[in-house]
Amino acid sequence: MSPLDRPLRLVAVLGSVQSSSNTARVVDVVREYLQERDNVIFDVIDPTGLDLRLPGLGSTADARSIQATIKEADGVILTTPEYHGSYSSTIKLIIDNLGFPSALKGKPVALLGVAGGRIGAIKALEHLRSVASHVGSIVLPGPVSVANVRTAFDEDGVLSDAELKGQIQSVADRLIDFINDHIYPAIALEALVRGKMVPEDLLP
Image (cartoon, rainbow, N blue to C red; front, side, top):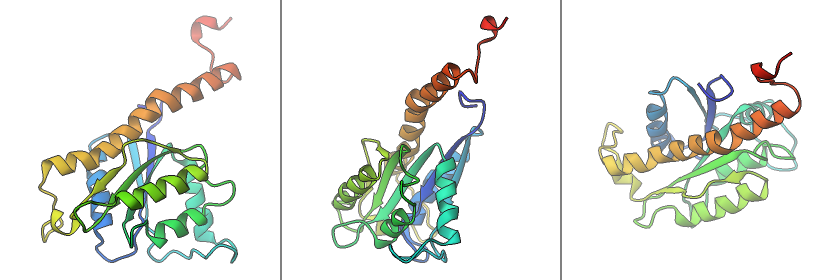
């Protein structure tokens, strides 16, 4: 269990609506990895079919729902394919629908990008880091970029490259480690100061 005696909740935001997208396959690698842990709840926000409007056109029930999901999360993984040297319009639309202040404000965020080229999603992740930082999230160092993603998975969607699989899984590991090392201690200390948690040896 976490230091707060409850499962740690992580949310991945899928930055693609393409059917059978490689971005979704990479997120599935993280999902399968975290299924082995009984102290982690892992959710995926899939924008496919969601009613998300362009900025200035008002909020929707779907927008409010994803805001609530992210606010309840201990940490977030933002994922994106690289399109024309930047992140996808899908991930930007989701971020634009997270309210103001953003539901990402104060949240630890890990970045995961995929690209068909051999240099990976470096530019997309640089741009996404800037946006995520601007809305107030705590962007972790060490984003993971999956290059040559079209050939990384076989016809059944299986990733056989153990090294690449480990790199993708490390996104979750670093996020969990950061939460356990920095976020939970701060929450516990604040609760103690406010009198919500009192050690037994200090009780009258």
